[in-house]
Amino acid sequence: MKSFLSWFPVACAAVLLAHASLGQSTSAHRNSIVAEVNDKIITRHMVDLAMRKEEEHLRREYARQPQVYGQKYTQLQAETLERLIRRELMLLEYQEKGFKLPESIIDQRIKEDIRAEYGNRATLIKSLQVSNMTYEEFARLQREMIIQMVMINQFVSKANIVISPRQIEKHYVANKDAFRTGIEIRLRVIFLDAKKHGGAKSTRKLADEIHTILLSGESFAGIASVYSDQNQASRGLKPDWVKRGDLASELDQAAFALGQGQFSPVVELPHGCYLLRCEEVSQAKLRGLTEVRDQIEQTLIEAEQQAREDKWYDRLKRKSHVRQFSF
Image 1 (cartoon, rainbow, N blue to C red):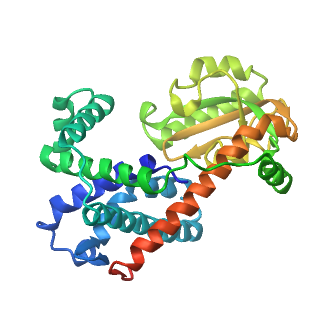
Image 2 (image 1 turned 90 degrees about the vertical axis):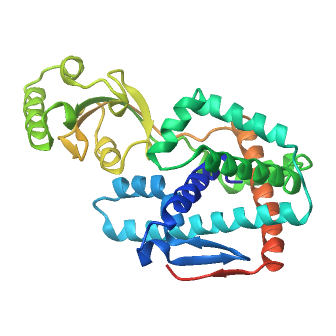
Image 3 (image 1 turned 120 degrees about the horizontal axis):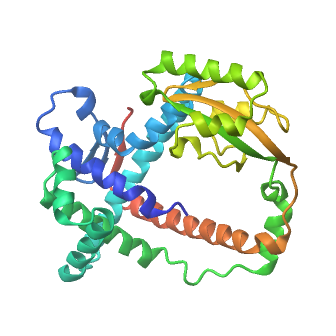
């Protein structure tokens, strides 16, 4: 099952931002209604805000593939709207069933979340001010998040889901390719941050100069120790094992075109330039059933839990007024 916690806080923030701005905005695009859930509405703006972080990732990932980006964007848009509709239906069910969580428990949970995420209330308030949110709005939506968590745990519990050894074995046999490690390479990286080198043009010039030095036979590790910017994007100077999909698409393509001991041409991205060296190659191998048994069991549990949530959601939807409009 897709983790509730992974998307709901983003959805909450989106609704908060939308509520703060709906009264001020005159844009038909921003305020256009894309769904009705009984007496509640979901606007295009709410969906845009809820998918903002994921959309930024898509834009970076498919910057040079506009057609693929358009397809992925449309899919993300539909999935985000579906999540927001589910949230509204679960909150409605909470009200109709007459459930009532003690406010003291909710208040304590909100305080714990604030400490975990922001450290203290003062830091939270500053963060909310950036988005024109009040603490009262934040607390209200945190309360709704807690209610939704309780509803999911109540109606979509995985406590009684039992996965048999036979199910695990069948899944393993049917999906063996998923348990192959794939080709992995031990990669050393030189990263030049465009912000630290005067912008894209001067950074590319420096990267080309470094590439020329490497062509002369200089040690890649030695050059990296001098020039590579120490930050998360560079993965550090120590070579790391990576597999396909671990890197941005441009880096992934360049890295897996290398043979052992080879280094790449300059790979230029909006935030900086990269040079990559393949230190070692590890060929694909199939992981044994014993090694992946727990992983398969968790996958099957999550699939069954998702199926149960979908059935519950369908029941909620059938007894409610849900209407969607085109974007």
